[in-house]
Length: 161
Image (tube, rainbow, N blue to C red):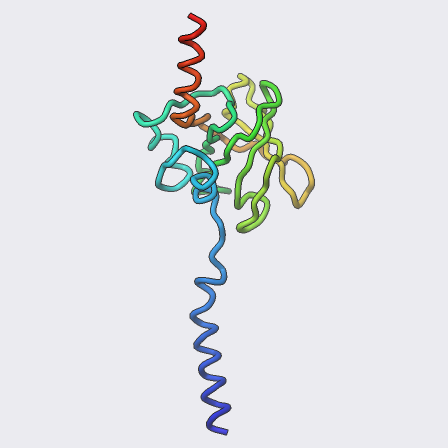
């Protein structure tokens, strides 16, 4: 009887320690750092400001760039996603984590610029649970370009000129 009680107590203690590790979920920031050449620390909402002086930033989508979303009531830590492909001026395909579900990774999903000025300041993103782009637009700062992308663009511009 004592042996069963000790085993049960040990199992209970193990379960109490397990959730921290077992429930650790992939966050958008960690995923963006893993799959892009943009290496910024801090919450996603801070990436735009933290990129200043280190990475070029702008409103034109480019493959390999990171789309930085602002923090809102619905997403207080902001969000970041990596541009996989530019479809046209208002549609891109992105790779990102923790949008469609806790820790879920979405690859090659559509993001649509719905801003009146066409400057990617308001974006609707594919949401897997509804199998559609989200109903609400999320505010975005713009794109953070990796140094390799910026260097490639500068070389191309110099060769044309």
